[in-house]
Image (cartoon, one colour):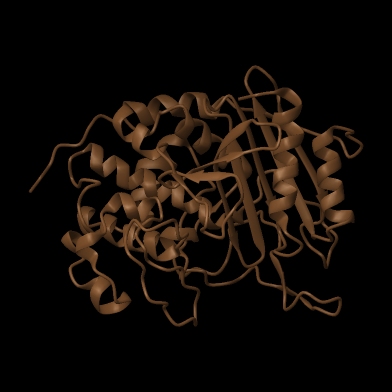
Length: 359
């Protein structure tokens, strides 16, 4: 049944603001607290390279780097690089699903079984008739997380607690494709990337290359002092797909996060849905967080709460967080996946938000 689509004014209105953003790179000797965190991440943590881009209302954009984009050539990290964003992808997938809800093409109260009959039962050993779409997006479906090559654990009872799971979002991606009859990559491009001018943001599918310019992505084969570092830039991460397969840039993630936090991508009802959170306690996840639909809130040690998302795939860790109104945002990426980049990202957030008191 054909359903009329709402106007795209919310999306198009955000484009003008997004394209107006400019950036002023930080000098190599910048003494800001943020630059010191970047330098420490390379000097003490041993990560290959790190970038951070900060946007604050009525101020010039700040961009800083430390370390290298390429261990072989020593090339520095620069603005405009593409990198794998891991689970930040979930915010894009959730946005598309909530837009479909706003259009009346699905309901967040729909069950997985309605759109994917038999899939949860036959492939995961669960009951899709007891899992609604909201539970998929806030990770309370009871479905376990699974990595390639791992046997699928037995599902838990839906609603019993928070389990951060790629399965939830890959099922959501399948439902989006069932509802629209289009590929998820095309829906993200049509509904989000193109209207916002996100020219460096895309879901590559099985494509292994990353568009240039890009930093090399590195991983280690262990944790000991003798662990070898491997270049995993050209890697098929299609297994992460709707849960973590996208590629983007710092500038694009700022534009996306700005529009998302300000409510320019979703009508008010769906915006409230996205930012209604559940506890992550007991889920063996990031401390001091609550999870919404594709986004989460993180309370910093100084009491300030920031919103957005983070993501990790082999060779790349990304964090994109901002104040609830979107007026102050930090996006960072590390092109190595060891020595707990999450601790570095939290330091970056505290260096900015705790220092300025932005909320």
